[in-house]
Image (tube, rainbow, N blue to C red):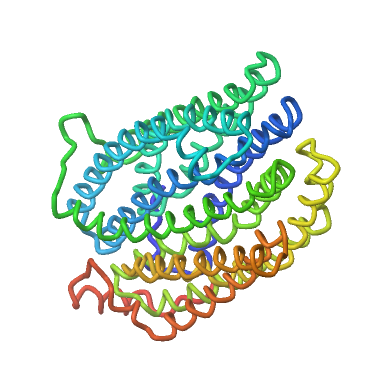
Length: 466
């Protein structure tokens, strides 16, 4: 169901919009976790290291899909907030075509480049781990086209305030993936191939469910084959909003790739430990990423409606809700660090390093929670470049400090996660400075007529109550 967030209590809109996104992301992480648990327990720790090594690549290609999807969603959200239904429909159609073409391109690229990337970019020295990592990612890449189409649909639905739908799609995808993981790996003994095939089939299921839902639920987006319109002007706007968002996420992915090279240099024990730790890292980030998406759509709609006052109240409420959720999760992970790591079937030095990773990151993660919602605000306001630059600064700081710690101060493998502290503090400082400057207020790409804005503001008035 669509959600108009231009009136009513800000915190309630953001929370109710964000919760289904968090639940969906939780399900996504669940099937990544199940992949790791099944591979670690029913194959071996080297296989776990191989799957973990391919993770930066899966994140990089997903960044392409979500970045362009989020950028297009900002345009659609502002058009929705301004009440321009015809233009909104044309933009949605254009975004669907654009994401489908990109999906085909990156599917081919991913399949063709898997071996080269594992050996020459990620610098995996063990021949068997390198071979298994390339095999896993090559099969995974075959499903990228389905992932891109799903993200196009998800971006359209989030833009009109429907975040529950993506939860339903991901339930289907997650259940399918977990069942197929067990069937292919445990019973059929397909090894890493089975885990990768399970993921691809689950992506196909997710895409089919999302297309069916959009067609049945929304007449505005009920496109038949001959009704898809590619509007060059809307394409330009989608690219303008999407490219910075994509670059932002690619910066994050590139940072992960450089860190993975550093991790790989410490051998299979640290590779497996980092794979385990990073799985729970993603759980800690769920509230922040959910509120980021909620804040982007909330800001997009209110920017289109000319309600900057609501955006300011919204960010304050979001920071409070996000920090509370993250602190609770961090406390749980810190206390249960070792039992969590043991789920993946690791022991000895690998278990020791994974536990160390989890405890350290759980202690510093609230810093991350304080700056991420600002990225959503900047994106939704039509200023994705600011969000991109903040991510660039954070990742540059993280990678540089990690390498300096290892090669100058001989800190060792723990530098790979200790560098987060400095990166997130810098990102928080830059975010606060940019928000305080107020420059983000003048970046709207869609505006209502002044008379309509004045009437809407008078009708809604202050909305801080419940």
